[in-house]
Image 1: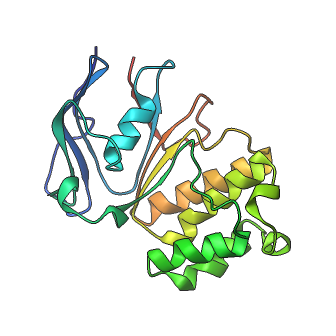
Image 2: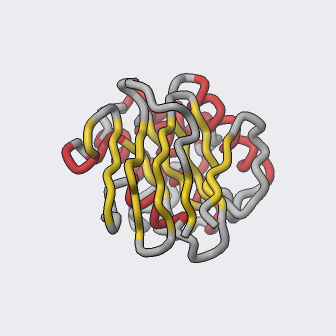
Length: 206
């Protein structure tokens, strides 16, 4: 069983994310706090619980025991809009166009003004009228990642999002992650790739 002590000393901060004695089966037992402006790569072998941990923080799965707090509130008691989660299921409406998907997400988060920022950042202008099912797997991944800009939540949870991305798009994603951290956000991501973000910390689960 992996056990992680707190990476930083716990302190009262309205924007921090804390895992208190979080256990899942026999995979991990975590006491850890993530402060604003932090980037954390979750590493470990297949089956060690990386995806499960992100899904628990997103409120999609329940741990075996323990609690998760964001902004000093248990996540079971807050609206799910506190985070943006991108997992293996990208959450695209395949019969909708690229523009319709981005517009749908931005309206849910009441951040319509960021819709065109997402389109511009990833250079999606020529794809806006394309149905998502017609796109390559890599481009579908980019449309899902563009949700990070369109939705504007302060906590990003990214599960293997770098897979199938071109080098150019991976650089765009990394720059976006760094900008998020620099603006006070918290980013957690799992990846089999080596981290190219020097400021990132590593949470090893195995």
